[in-house]
Amino acid sequence: MYELLGKYISSRASIAASDLEQIYTYFSPVSTKRNEHLLLSGEVCQHYYFVNKGCIRIYTIHEGGRDTSRFFAFEGGFGTALPSFIEQVPAAEYMQTIERSELLRIRRADFLHLAETIPAFGFIYRQILEQGFIMAQKRIYGFQGFDALEKVKWVIRHQPDFLLRVSNKMAASYLGISPSTLSRTKAKL
Image (cartoon, rainbow, N blue to C red; front, side):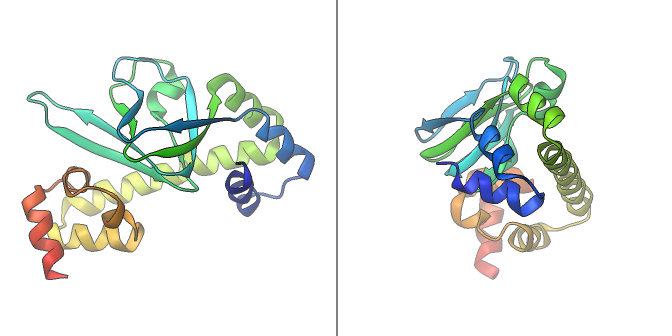
């Protein structure tokens, strides 16, 4: 249950086995169904999730019911509604599993406690924040001048399994194009 989390942590920071065992005690396993919500817009996010199996999608819903996918966390990755988690304000987004998933969940207070008391975990938290910021910036600034084909090539280069795991509708909302444009673009590859 904790093997993938241990590999994730050990691959990013030098950590004592006893610290790793202590970290495991703060995470609890959660099994979800397909399309199960972990957080609704307006709720305050109290958990961080590590994906053992499956996928977490973070998205917003606009007036008229159109949704925009902002982030996907697959196996071996962390996911949460970060602005709500950090600031403890109501989330402006939803968090759901898009397929049956096996997650490890940690409460916010425990997550922050580990970040403060175990240097390797604190380092990993900073890494998660930095990598998330960098990926968001690349996506935002890269997509500004990209046509549909360039966006699809970008996502294939940076997230090779993305288009195989996510529906066309969700992928198109993430890329900022229509599902029909995505289908036509994929056919060109």
